Image 1 (tube, rainbow, N blue to C red):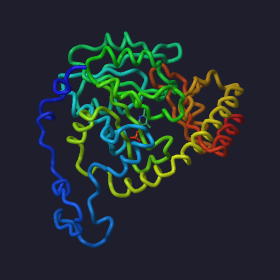
Image 2: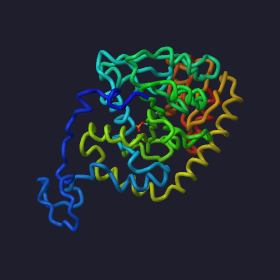
Image 3: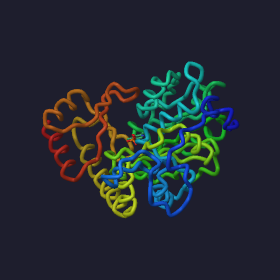
Image 4: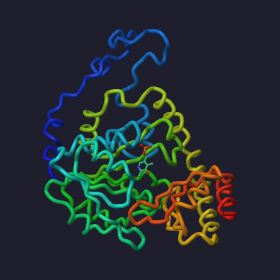
Amino acid sequence: MKELKELTRANIWNLAPYSCARNEYNGRNASVFLDANENPYNAPYNRYPDPLQLEVKKLLAKVKRVPEECIFLGNGSDEAIDLMYRCFTEPRIDNVVAIDPTYGMYKVCADINDVEYRSVSLDTDGFSLNADRLLSACDRNTKVIWLCSPNNPTANALDHEEMVKILTHFEGIVVVDEAYSDFSSQPLFRHELAKYSNIVVLNTMSKAWACAGIRMGMAFASKEIIDLMNKVKYPYNINVLAQREALDILKDPYEIDKWVRTILLERSRVIDAIKLLPLCRKVYPTDANFILVEVDDAQKTYDYLVSKGIIVRNRNKVHLCQDCLRITIGTKTENQELLAALRTM
Ligand SMILES: *Cc1c(COP(=O)(O)O)cnc(C)c1O
């Protein structure tokens, strides 16, 4: 990879970050806090949260097996996605390259930041990744490549060797979004941070960790990249309530394992049942907690399900996904309801 300084926007590299009141004292045994203009009443909500979320990161480091200093926490993965643009791309000059179809936020954040977004189609047979095609869409102003594995909405994991090829040949930042990796048995790039200085791996509390409501996403990368992201983020980006709930859920990772195993069992049951339906043309292979199903008429099926109070995601208008519905795996009861409705359509 190029030197980080060369990849980083000059204004960001030179930025003097906001200094939080509580960052400045480094004495121990402090018990009287008159430094932050807080109200002394209404504990614990009267106090500002830890800007670097060190307690949460300590647990996360164990659970995810990533060094603490290589973890960034954001207000959902969305914050980390936006920060990639703010740290590395010069509006109207730089560009990013991404697979297509993929998660919509990469493009939304490009548009917000006024950065050119180049889509490179996945292969038509099975949504596979072609590293050479992606690399040839890059030029000297390409700063970031977006990969998502398992990919949303196609549900498949991308080929590991092709991803390695991109990581080793591309000079800029490669983001690998592993939001769904708990549902997959593929090797994890978050365990290869030391091998690739240009990788940023995204994870989220929103899927396997069942905490979409608290808005907590994370990025794993070299300490240098994490320091840069921390410099640019809002000082108190994760509130007290979210940090507390994250600590609670991280103390019981076995509960998550149980949920994931149940969802995986349900996933194979739902796939088998949907494949038997006359309206089903194809169920694509999945490494995630959802399935992509091609049906005879996606709009009609979607509308019918809505009329029954069942909401799935209509991906009919998405590149390569004509007549496809994206269906999240729910509880056994919810899945039963979905299947019963589809059988009587
Ligand atoms: C759901 C999802 C996320 C999670 O985003 P949050 O902002 O953390 O809720 C990230 N990436 C992909 C590909 C997703 O599908």
